[in-house]
Amino acid sequence: AQKITQTQPGMFVQEKEAVTLDCTYDTSDPSYGLFWYKQPSSGEMIFLIYQGSYDQQNATEGRYSLNFQKARKSANLVISASQLGDSAMYFCAMREGPYGGATNKLIFGTGTLLAVQP
Amino acid sequence: DTGVSQDPRHKITKRGQNVTFRCDPISEHNRLYWYRQTLGQGPEFLTYFQNEAQLEKSRLLSDRFSAERPKGSFSTLEIQRTEQGDSAMYLCASRTSGEETQYFGPGTRLLVL
Image (cartoon, rainbow over all chains, first blue to last red; front, side, top):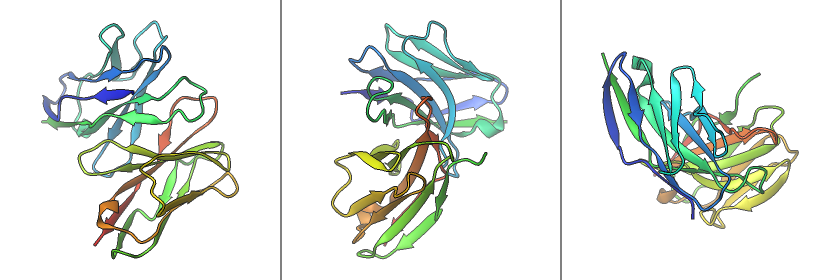
């Protein structure tokens, strides 16, 4: 069965510094997709970044980058130049099954609470 | 283009009452998902629609839960005879067939007293 593991319940980072949020995954499918979402206290899940299993390069979106290490089955999120507005829960997720499959539902980890300090 | 919307944002009900939530996906999105998120956990899949067809239901979705997407646009999730264990955030997400990413609504927070 597919599984996402986030081992950091919470983290502090100083404003303007970079921070890495860890995510490891387990799957036997050769094709999979990995996502990071941000959930502020308001509750909405905000999509941040996506990495496909066959992508040759690590994904980047503005201040977000994904450190994808396939052999280690890890997909860590790196946030550069942290801002106070980055304080939120961050969830790593994996698409279940190959793309275009019947459902492609997401399987989520338990999340990491990030607190950015001024 | 507006995002996914959900209504109501908050619902408090007494145990045993029925509740219904609504989700309006992004207009061109034909795939719609419902997830449930309890405190301290990530969202868990409940059910999936492709257009108006409900193609998958999780074992989490007991007989008291029913979901519809009558015209392939908005969707409703009904919980009958609510129990305290139903207290959670109910999230709706949508996507197109040609895109991986699911876009989430703001969620409905349910509290069953």
